[in-house]
Amino acid sequence: MSALPASPFNPKVMLALVLFGALAFFATLYFIGTGQTGGGNDGGGHAVGRGLNGFAALAELLEDDGYEITLSRSPGALTGESLLILTPPAFMEAGDLADVIEDRRLAGPTLVILPKWNVAEIPDEWDVEKDTGWVLLSGASEPYWLEELQGDLAMEGTVKQLPQSGMQWRGLGMNGNLPDAQSLSISGERIRPLIRDSLGKTLAGYLDDGGYYPDMADAAGIAPTESDDEAILEKWGVVFVAEPDLLNNYGMADARRAELAREIVALTMEYGELPITFDLTQSGLGGTQNLLTLAMKPPFLAATLCLLIAMLVVGWRAFRRFGPPASEGRAIAFGKRQLVANSAGLIQRTRRMHLLTAPYAEMMRIRIAAALGLHRADDSQIDAALHRRLPDEPPVGHTLGHLRKARTPHDVLRAANALRSLERKLSR
View 1 (tube, rainbow, N blue to C red):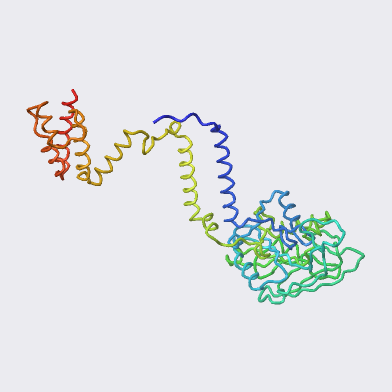
View 2: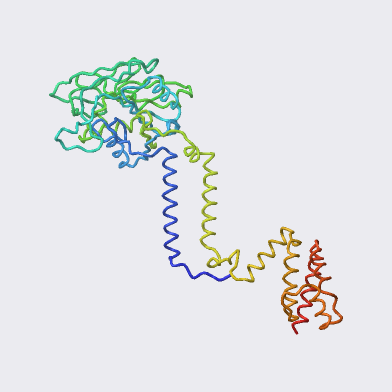
């Protein structure tokens, strides 16, 4: 075997291309598995929306303040130890919202921002400047699920037109105006006001369900609930912001409202240091469960990592092979000698050697006659000439007969060798 010439490709360049392609492929699988396959800036009222009703500005503001921000597309992440900010849409099941709030009462605080605006896409025929995710505000209304909340969460919502003059909101030691005079307020037996409008209605309040929330009670101007029950002391508070213009992109255009947003978030987590999770699942941006999703989560994540490491090891061994590959010889070589060898090998493997006896006997009879100087001679003439030339040799006809009658490989080879030996003696 002969060695091939050196590769015309630079090994480092080829390695870089392979690694880049592999990383891109695995990154695609990862983002598909985790459900992060799109931006989500669809004009909705959630933390990815960049329209007036979205909350992308609030998420960026809190991230700039040093908070650890997570945009959750998985329902399983809603029960983690963090401040969960819910931005439910106007149409949803009230029971689903109540379940999320109840499931995390011992895990962390919850901030619920109610929807108010009815939005629509900006028509393409309008000659206005617009960007992806921008919306047209087409009126305000209470969320449809609000009146279906039961128990401690039972409350009512009202949209009112506020006076244009004077401060339209006050609370937490601050005051200011809303970007629009249409205001959504809530009222409920368990809701304690934190922010009020100019009509005295509650724009934001906390859920007074018997838990111990001293900071919120102080901000609302009431005495906190006293209890020695450990279960009550471990519960986290829930804050409802009925007026979304205090926290949405529309509201973040004003420095006072931005400062109020910081204070509401800090008060909800009782001035602690917690990571903040914005829920996207209720807005329809959750990731679906599939095999790739399971592969990226424990306990299957360990097997996925082991598989990736094994693939890297195999790839590295293939790249670091011992020298260039050697060329292999042809399975069927060129030349008459190889053709004869291949044919003989085929006959031997098929065990059909007895079929060669008659043709070989005829060929040797002709060659021996030629060696004796005879042309077209029969066996008797060959025997007579052979007796004159080599008196001690047996008759040729007798040996040819043995060859024609031979059936085993041993007998065939023995008779053929005798004829070949006789031919060599005559050729000397």
